[in-house]
Image (cartoon, rainbow, N blue to C red):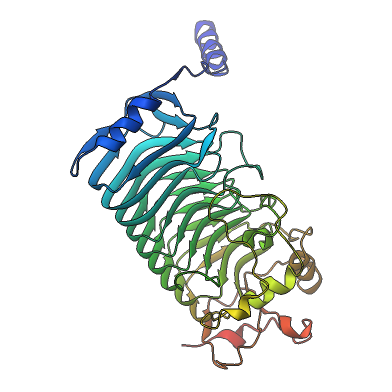
Length: 405
């Protein structure tokens, strides 16, 4: 018996030892040369190891290409010493490209940015800032923008000062079975169309999953289906640069739906987000809450800042409509919302000891009186309509107000 105890103690002691320091290798010149000389249809195999880069890696104008590492914890591309370029890995102007089984860390701007690619797959990519959440970190860990046929699966995104997994102005998107933590926003779909978000876990972000439509961009979003996600404990302080749209997210937010339409949100598990489970808001409220804010910290990348002149975009609809929320599971062990934000203070005052599960700002759309904001949850779900345009005078917690077919 004594020998067994000694063996266990030795095992525990061994587990507590510090990990071996990384051994860094330099393949910068050879890897960039390979990316330039790749032929259509080629597969580039990244070796196992830790590799440091001083400038962006660029893959441009390639078709039917696979970039494959030995695993997200075995092939590590670090841009911690980056002196040139904004992104870590930039892919553009191609079709049918697969990135899989490697890690990208600590880029000056976005870790992996893909633009104007028709058919892009991110599979088992770990994209992080290794020192944890900081305002100085890049904006996006995985960032496809202006793309078509996007698949992001089994990836990890952490440390982004805006959104970990961010899809912007793209069509036909699937985001599934990923993990996002320690970001301001875990997962965000912005101005994108025909999007499915399912099977993901978003936790320890400021906000878990966001579906936004913003003014002044190349297209507007619609047709999003969000289901079977586990969104929990998103209570991290907001570390976005002031003036960024996501700087308005209250800590403790599960889902936020902003100014989009044709969205269904169902069968999600929403737990212990201390301020709000699901928020449905207009750009009018975001602009009002952040009136006069300007961006104080320069950002590298495609970060969307607040637009106080959003009315000048005459094609933009700042109000959400055709929103269908049902069959979600809510739980919250927190009695008080985050009190460092005006919204949290309002909830503490108006819903003492029970932060709301679903909140709709209630700001009227003069062009669309019936906006079809439908919340059909069980009777224990606390639903709140704020009447934000009238200083919350008509605030109600009557869930029947939003029940509809």
